[in-house]
Image (tube, rainbow, N blue to C red; front, side):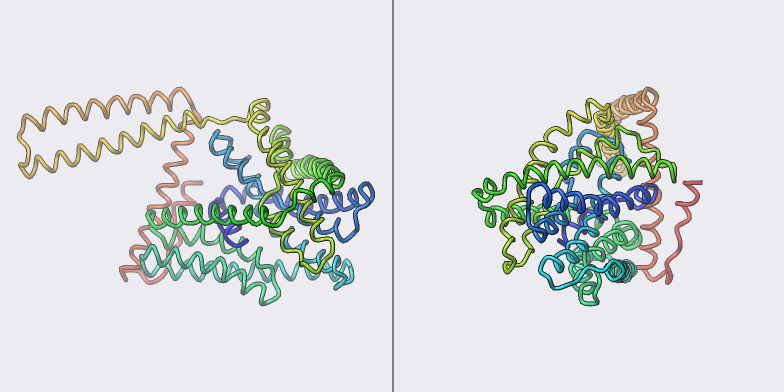
Length: 444
């Protein structure tokens, strides 16, 4: 679990998350409760499933895992806000779902008695301890990495922080999942800016992309080892009921909570985005990992795994494969081809400018003759001019590309300021961390 959660938290931008924190929190907390209750009552009353099985299936399926949908969003250039809503909800409801699963597992195994006040107090305690542990470790490592520039050490520290936070939070009675989410957010949005240079950030990001892919693969290998296809047929009725209940409760939570958020804080989430959030709420590795964690001593373990796996299979094969068509019908496809064309033109311009600079240095050192220099320089300048014309045309014809270019430039300027402070600290010319000036100035 730690690699899956940390990678998602590392890659999500706090600035985007903060803007829609209220609707994301609603979907992550109230949405989980609606899903659990809907699935539990449906399985119990319609399919006649045992209450213990229904509780564990409901808790497992309450965690959304739209990895493939978000990857599709990025490929097609879907708007950042819709991507943030999908990722943010998944990130936080994973934590809520795992906490709920732990509480319901105790009820299913009859090791705990249900009490609303006690359950609420325990929920707040485990969440609070998890946040505290994640924040403490995250900020501590952030300031530590300012003192040196060793990519492999900094990469190792992020790995240690993910697993270490999980273990420490659990040891002190908190949620390790919430702790990992918190430390990932802190390191991804704060620590990577003040303590890592751009090259190190890239190395760490690629490392976590690989690790998340590897762990996801392990989870699905475990599924293949644990599942018996015969059990899918034996539980086909319960699987069908769970799928129907999941789609219905997902629709209720997304549309009602989004409407509530629109009314209370003017979130302005259009119905098209709400529809994508509803249909794109897949179930994946987190749900299966929870189901596989059911103790073997529980008689209904095989049934829980079969139902969760059957529902996950439906969401991946049916919902996942039809999401692109839904995006097309709702006119939610973005401008990724234009952005790709723009980024390629900018990259070529940067490369040719460097070639021109190198050629000028060779001329200054008299390593090439004048005629060769002038001829090659004229060719390069001609190509640079053509690229600049293409860039100007894209920005003039498509205002969204101009906005994208400005956003990219702001990110670059913020990174340069943070990197400069970190370099000065590592060189011993600056003792204390300075608060960046550009974020407030650029947003103002």
